[in-house]
Image (tube, rainbow over the protein chains, first blue to last red):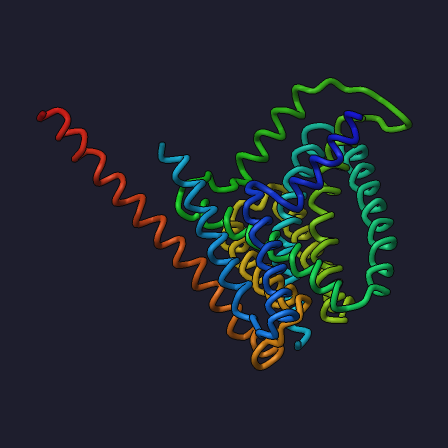
Length: 69
Length: 258
């Protein structure tokens, strides 16, 4: 059980890293892109870069705000 | 896409990982013993070869669109992690990854550990440390080679980039017999973060069904835009830090005055 937990923790750290919000926003951005493209027939190529930049900015803001306190 | 950008991207990404693995191997090899260290390194390389042999061909059989969606998401998340760390380090919010101090930490830990023989290995501590270091850094190399190579249908070019990086760093390590402290690791990490984020965003969106304006040529715009946004965040955090430190004494004097 301990080894299984360590295995899970390793892959979580490897893929998700320090801030899980970034991963969650990218997954949400991809889902929204797919919905817009397939359901609404909008070629939303611009959406994922915007989400990625916003996720990075938000994550940096959170990291530096907690450092400054 | 031309093979050269692919080779260069994989080369830089793998060079960063190789520098980190080299630091661990050198620290353990010099302070403990080379035989067990090299055994640990060899065992890790075998494990990496098995993982690559198992995952690599299997990925080739998957349909391209869902593969791009998943790999794109992973690369974008991975790239943003690298970019985040590089920006935080460039602005002083996170300590720079210093190979010299990492090396000294490893040396101190290696000198303090007791010597123990196990399973035909003379020094189990040296073996496991070298094994873990090479395996963990190597996994990132495998991930980058497989995802970039498979998406561009050019695994050969990705392998050339990775192999060249490992050979160059190993030769440099043998030549200087010390951790490679002069490698501008943070800026390499920033560059790799930009590339991973750009390719991940491009493939992920393609996998989600979008058609990029100009097809592959969109990457020629996306890569510099991601780099500019990263640079803008560095500028923003630096100016915020300067403004914060300028404000603090003023606030303190106000408090004293009142």
